[in-house]
Amino acid sequence: MQIYADRLPAAARQLVTDLIVVVWVCLWIRAANWLHDWVGGLAAAGRTLQDAGTGLADNFADVGSRVGRVPLVGDELTGPFEQAAGAASSVATAGQQQQDVVADLALGLTVAVLILPLGLVLFGWLPLRVRWIRRASAATALRGRPAGQDLLALRALTTRPLAAIAAIDPDVAARWRDGDPEITAALAALELRSLGLRAPH
Image (cartoon, rainbow, N blue to C red; front, top):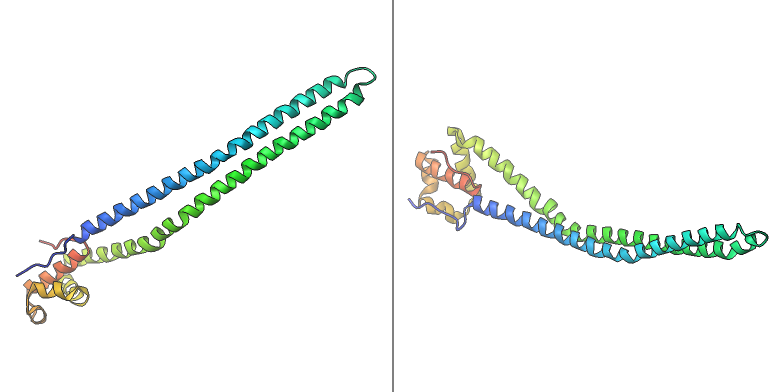
């Protein structure tokens, strides 16, 4: 009796697929992190601008307070320094706003880069993986029972490729209808192999 075998067993295919998905997710996360860091680096100019503006504002305010203590003309001399301190504060505010814009841009681009690849995993691969787990769990519960062998054999006859079924025996359907235990076991094993499971010994 010839036993049909796939080029790559189902368990191996499942493992390879899982590894590919893990690598895929890791690569996209690393790419998103790199993009976030690269865009975030553009905020350096804003930080420099903010630090410079804050420093100038503090210096002008300090000088203005000292000039204000000059008798008679102190109050008149503080005006230009207060205006300069205000202008420097505006520069610091602009620097902070630039940093906020860059941070929002970095976050938005990171999310945009991750949406498609992670969406494919969550809505494409994951449902198929959950479906396989359910089918494999049900088959595992059936394979040790005599009636389970019949159900697995019937499942193989209705879902497995015709070439795989015919490779078991030329008269596989007739022998199964006659209740041949060898054919029933072979069909059940075929169904289990399609799920990456081993037949009971």
